[in-house]
Length: 469
Image 1 (cartoon, rainbow, N blue to C red):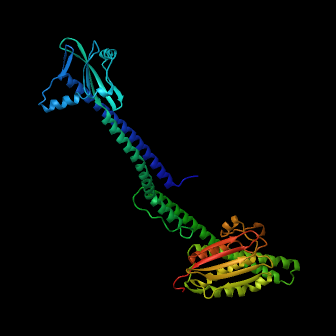
Image 2: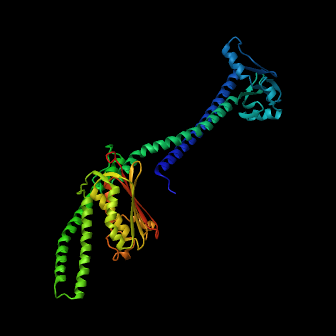
Image 3: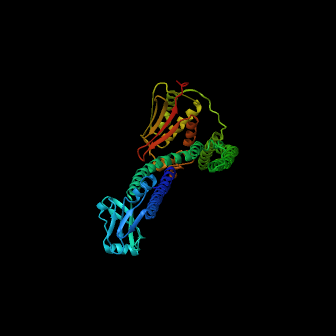
């Protein structure tokens, strides 16, 4: 299943932004962690180097000497000695230890002291009270012996900061993604709104309104170029359709004269006293074909003039109930000759504003079509009714019916549901095309409901204006 363009744009934007946001969040967390770790190591180095200046070791003793009246010295020494201890690097004996080290159980063995003397590295230790970072450094005493100094800083604030930032990311990323999804959906709709307007304007253009053009905003962007390209195509199409209409009209007009002359000559030959019976039958058949061609040419000419906008409809109140009843009375002899029952069921005074002659032709074409395809002993019913805003004309028959595929094509020119019957069934497949044009000119709609073997129902819906009421 292919997603709509707006959905795809919103999804791509959300995925892209979500990926960038997740990557940025991970990167920012790593950068913050490294920065805090570097700050802790830098601070530990400062404390270790500074404490060397205050530490006095020698003769198996260790003490920190500073001026307690100097606030800066007192503050620094207090921080540096919060986690510290001093060992004799040769014997491994502990000479001094802060109260912060005592509960942590980090007292070194002589072997560990000697190992740290050789490799005085900094290491992180996990304790019950959090992580500590401890530096190891060797200091020479006044007695010439080596002493191991350990200074530690708590990594608890660093871990707490990272934990809070991590929690913030866990809440921020889903919220940001949710906002991004809605924002992407809105932005994609906003970006595609001009395209939707072009599509809406394009749908309103048909073969009768090829002179209309799509609006161009004047921004010169891609959408404007699309609109200009469509307008150019419409211009070429309008020119081509106009040429075809002129050709059809000219051809139909030119064919009428020779057909009329040919019919006259056949009539003269038919009346000739020396014509034999077989010749008379042939002449009669030829005249029927000529009449059929003449009717076809008249219909083509009418459609060509209609689509070219050369036919102007009058606007006046028309009583559809009275019009339908009158036509049914006129066509009853035709229906009786075909053994078809023709009835009219009309509400009182269903009035619309339109052209009476063309509405009469609409009804006549629908009734002629129904009678044409309804077998003997069938029924054709015309119903005229109205609702709050529309007038409804239903022409129902019990004829052969149409398949779904044929029903979708029934208003196309020259369409015949059963081509094999084109010679036996009069007509050229233009009547319903003309009906559709008449309905469109009256701002109405038309639909057909049909099933093979169950007949067809053509429904015309025409608006009822206040003038009609």
